[in-house]
Image: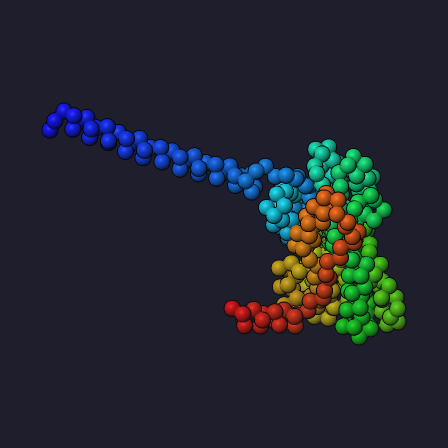
Length: 332
Ligand code: BGC
């Protein structure tokens, strides 16, 4: 082989190798960029940063609120910093609100558990941070809007259901999350409004569970011992029904008690299925989180926003579960 041919082959091979290397490193660089893009949501740093503050992170209801909000992140190029105490703790929740104000987020979506939230909400708004409330409202504050259940109406709905299903004859015990919680107060007021109109019904006791299943069980147990004539219970938050039915089981009262409580958690659905719970008030936590982001975006963009956004509250009974299962069977 001539010397020039050898040089020619050598140069061609080097060129092909160099080209291969260039293609390989270009692809690697592209992949790295893609990773960065994914990490910063939608190709760039998020345009907005919202704080969403709920009652407790370790709770099926609040996980749903968070998932609903997060689902909107990409659409609006917003980062939702979702925080809350691990277990319900209003003081810690207030501190998170304070921190959100100090870190100058673009918007705050907060569950305003009690009166103490109003001054901090006002402080945020005075500093130019728009605030809306979720699940529990602070109507006296400067917040722009509320999204969640109409808690007074939900109480009335529970009252009407109990009256109808006990045929207007019941001796009632109430287990509520906390007396100081604004939404629980409304759920009780609405419930009482209906029961007071019914002659054969009397409320004989009311205690707080402290948003805790053991608390609910202890209070229901004590109540049933002190008032063995109780024939019906009303629970105003997710874990109350679990506690009420556990106490009733211990005292052999499961079969003759009527129980109505809040929220469609898996545990509550199982208790409904087994007949230990008679009815649930179902709220829409996913929708609360999801729509709260849309509303906050409208507020930020200066669009006119309605003050009250009530999500549905409906009653579910065992018969509804059977119907749902049959529907699912048909579509699968
Ligand atoms: C309430 C929430 C509460 C949850 C857990 C729900 O019924 O709407 O505010 O955090 O129960 O107790």
